Image (tube, rainbow, N blue to C red; front, side):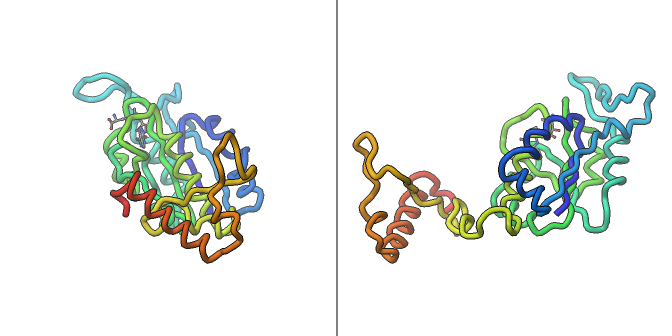
Length: 219
Ligand SMILES: C[S@@+](CC[C@H](N)C(=O)[O-])C[C@H]1O[C@@H](n2cnc3c(N)ncnc32)[C@H](O)[C@@H]1O
């Protein structure tokens, strides 16, 4: 998969691409990530990319030309262009799975007060990561890319995905590791019984109990 991120702040992505699982995914060539500073597409002498809103009001608005020129430069017939926007569809695991099958994703990060409305004509989808306002689309782009990249073949062990929260409309089951007892808190006996049928049954029951208690809405 190839990912292009259109942003005014490419250095924000340095930690993201240079650490942990995402870094390993890049080294394994499961994904290629490029950041493109759309300021480079500004035709103004001072490389300005924003301006005051027509009709008045606070804040600066991203001008259409640098962003649209950048989109047109990177877009191919295999691309899906995604605008990060609090007004977009709320991001869920199902969407991460769907996007993990794409060949080329282009993320457009807004900033300041937002972007000129005409930019919407040049994107395929608008995605929000939640009902709150961030300063820019960079963190949402990282959140969405992270959730997609870990689903790509070979990036993490396949069985790690199977019982994860939100698969089959359930939350994950409780997990424990060594030591067997810590500050009087014991690992449930079933998990050290060696009886794999019982362990599977216990985990399923716990998944249902947890989901009912915490997230009835996804059951
Ligand atoms: C300050 S926000 C603009 C908010 C806009 N004025 C509004 O009220 O809808 C600047 C940029 O951050 C990004 N952004 C902020 N919150 C977001 C969210 N919850 N999900 C996705 N992108 C977000 C978008 O790219 C947005 O254009």
